[in-house]
Image (cartoon, rainbow, N blue to C red; front, side, top):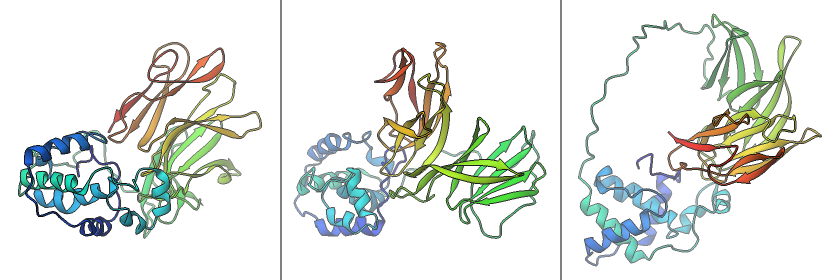
Length: 347
C-alpha cells in the first residue's frame, strides 16, 4: 500500500485474509461506473483517493482490500484475533459496526480488480546510492556488539563523544571520538533520542521498535555523576512509542516544559508537558493522533516567543492546535495565529 495512504494498518496478513474469507464474495455483476463512484466516496473519508494503477491487481485484492474490510467494520472478528485487540478497540480506529454494505464493498473490490494492472507499474530509474563521500572518510567504530541493533546515534561535539543505543540489549553506549568504548548504561528500554538540557540528560525510549499499540515508551532523566551516567528517574512512564523530546519555557513561568513526539502506531499523540512548581509535569495534548516524529522550537515569527514545528509521517499534515502566550499564560489556539505556529512537515 502506498506509504502516503496507509494509516498504520499493521494487522497481520493472516488476520486480513481471515476477514476476507469470512465476508464471502458476491457473484453478481458489478457496474464499474457505480463502483468507481463508491470508491471515490468512501476512500477519501480517510486519505487521498488511490488510483488503481498505484498497485498491481494481486496486491489490491489479496492485501489492501482485506485490510480495508477490517477498517470499515466488516470484520470485527479479525481485530479480536489480534494479540493487541484490547488496545486496538480502545484506539477508536476500528469500527464494530459496518461503515459500508458488503455489496458496496465488493463492488469497490471489483473496481480495483478490473482497473489495476496485472503487474505493478515500474518505478522511475534512480541513481544507485554509492559510498564515494568526497568530504568524509568512513572509519569503522572499534566498538561493536556481537548481536545488537543500532537505534540511535548522537554526536556531542563539545565533549567529543558519540552516544549510541543498542535496541536489542537495551543499552546506552558512549564512545570517544576514535570509536573506542567509554561506558555503557543498561536502561531496560529502547533508546531513540538523547538530549541535554540545563545540565540534565533526557533519554527518550520508544518501548518497542516494531509497531505496537501497547504504551511501553518512557522518558528518563539521567545525570553524569563520578564520571559515569546514572539513571535517576522515569519522568514520563508508559507513553506510546515516543521518538523525540524538545525543551522550552512555553508559558513564561521560568520553568522548562517538555514537547514530546509520541509517534505511536494506531494510538499516538503530540503533547507539551507543563512543568509544575513541585517538579511534576501536566500533559496538554496538541495533536491527538499518531505520526509525529520530532519537533523544532524556534521563534519563527520574530515576536520573541518560542514557536514549534513538527515533522511526521504522511497523513499528519496541516495546522494543529498549539499553545499561545497571552499575558504570561498559555491558551489553546487552532491553526496559525498570534504568538505561536505549528506546521506539519510531511515525510
